[in-house]
Image (cartoon, rainbow, N blue to C red; front, top):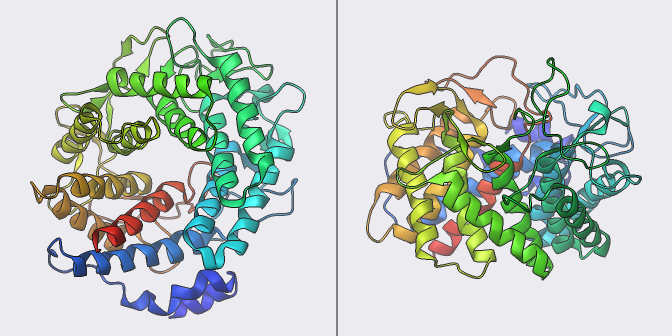
Amino acid sequence: MKFCIRLAALCSPFILSSCASAQNSQPITKPLPPIASSYRTLQAQTDENLRLNVLGQWFPRAISKEYGGGFDQNFSENWTNTSNGQRSLVYQSRLTWLSSQAALRYPTESNGWKEFASHGADFLRTQMWDNQNGGFFWQLENGKPIRDGEKHVYGIAFAIYALSAHFRATGDARSLALAQQAFRWLDSHAHDSKNGGYYEALTRQGTPILASTSSDQPKDVIGTRYGYKSMNTHIHLLEALAALSEEWKDKTLHSRLNEVFHLVRDTVVVSPPGAMNLFFRPDWKTVPDRDSYGHDIETAYLLVEATTALGHPDDERTWAVARSLVDHTLEFGFDEPVGGFYNEGGTFGGIFDSDKVWWVQAEGLNALLLMHRKYGQTTPRYWEAFQKQWNFIQKYQIDHKNGGWFAHVTQAGEPTPDTAKSNGWTEGYHQGRALLNVSQTLGELAH
């Protein structure tokens, strides 16, 4: 209970409603059968983890009135605020999305969560949007855009994703209007009408950057060489377009969602074996690279989500591709004796990076339960792996001293010392979404 007492000084009362039961969340010592009582037990644990180790860590701690508002993004291992005026579009969007989802999940606490979400949406609208040229800046430092105002489809996608969620949670028409405006700007400036998909890095004025102008800066803000397309941008663009399509029925939007969906499913993913290419030339010819297990298993979920948004939730081909991504990751990227997914490796074996990264573990948990729900009547594989994965997270990925999830642990589960809990790329989005989905699905399976 010491953690709960310390948290009380920082958090609003509605976040603390499950604090008294935190001491009761213990890893499962032996596998549970897939029955209602098991689902309820794990539902309670995952929801508790969501409240205490995700929502209760960033909110209201990250709320800021400095630098135009928004969310502070830099916190040390023990949650000391080390922020210095940086405001990343991805981080601001993800916390806006997360607080919007909390407002939807917890209706009796929704007013508080809506305040947090609206704080983030206001910052996106008033500070991150470029009123002169359109589009969202990638990052502000002390209120000024970095890299001459360079913009990126990856970041704009997350802003659309967040604003769509904020509109759903609050009904604020300004957020839907800005999401629509951002999509139109993106489509007019970045869509590749010849080859499909989107150019990724853009100047402040919205011109695609197809080659580096400096040998000292050959890559864009997400690490892709200028002029190339990436798996990472397009899977999250898929996610954003699917979310916006739930709020806005527009022919162009539906067409682009369908286009990106088929590019991801049929070009980015190679099934069999169930792995993804990471980088592409503009004409979608592949550029060899390693296999990112976390993105593979995350995309299994995103494909199912997108085909549902397109009106085909039971599409057999999509489910087969999604399942192949999960099966391949289990075969080559899962630590069977200990639990947890490795970060990167070869398509057919050989681990290049054996660290277990927070977001990979979260996406694995989410996808495994998705597969169990679909195929659990014919195989116990996904349910058994789901429990092993949840036990690994509880035992090793959670910081039981300071709260939150460790960003990186070793293969054996040892945390990397002095690693920040939060920065421009590390926040509550992946584990928040996974726990929101998992706790809801477990509750539905229990009935």
